[in-house]
Image (cartoon, rainbow, N blue to C red; front, side, top):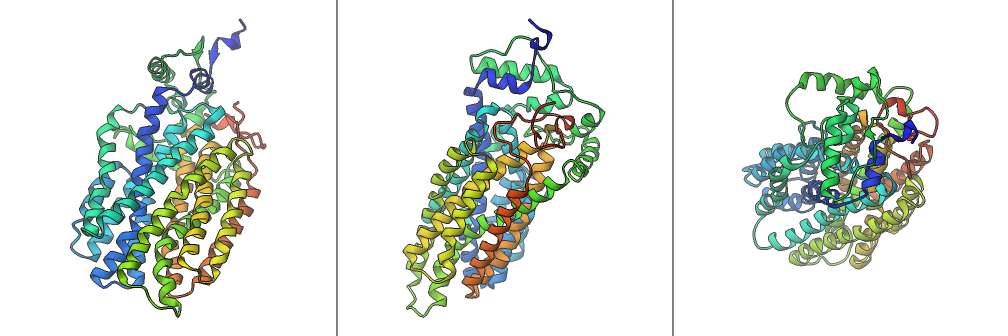
Length: 476
């Protein structure tokens, strides 16, 4: 046997072992983190109107409750503990200011959601990574649907405080099981801890009742620069307090690498894509509740009774949340066949088509149908973007690159309720839809300008593995 056959890479090991029981458990745990985040975001569709009515808030003050959550998501304080404690305490908020502060802290906990995504991705074989990441994303949809169902049950009987408290339960479950989750072997390889990475892979193989390839595990090659940046990748789920100063220093260095000639263009384009994608997706989510009452208020038709309007809000949000499932199925069918870029382009075009009729007032049934179609394809673009971004960067800066893009997307989430939702509540629905359409066009242009396609490529472990050519993901 030739010498090069005596060693194997991490991706070769994952491919050899396949997707087994361990990956299934990792999917369940990381998916619960995604489920929890979806519930905390979706709750904004119900708490805002309820608090506005109870405390006599203005429309801008109501929108600010949503905005502070997205602002908190940009924080580095992310974690299940912060989400659970702040989410639970917000149920006992005595006034508007305390609610703003606690929802902002809950958002800070949600800011670590991308870590679950990246962590699970690093255990999945590259050949069908796109499919399994779409499966992972169904947890977001089920979280959205569960929150809509919970609100439908709780709000008419109890109050928004009970909804906040019950929605914090998934974050508590995450805390219980976090100690059982291993570090990413890919992260360990970037730090030169090959033995530790091999031990984790060996345990995974035993758990899956399979075996590792013959030979020894090898990293894809590191150098001093890579070692410096490898520490920037915070240990997923299990990061400890040791060497915090080193981590902060190297994390800043990794952030600076996003603006190096090798990554600058892609980084800026990803930021614009995430901003537009988040603005459009959360705009559609929030409009499902806002348009139900706004169209009646702004039209000359006879207003429905308050109870009927309230019921229509829950129905609209519930149905449009379910619409994400066929969107995820479509994404799963496209992402590994036509590629990430073309898949997002196709889905954005359909979002544009479904939103266009909403420039004028529509019946409630047609409104729900159009928003469902728009949300279906918007969810697809959102998820494929979350697959695409981590694949572009090497392991040594993957969480930093994807995390910063994710944070920029949260700016879109912050601006959306203040602008798009504000326009709707002020009876400027046409302007709000045109704004969403313009951002869709911008996002499509950005996708076409990104020079890389990651379909079927292995994840790069080191910075040296990234070339300046379009073969960005060919391992060195």
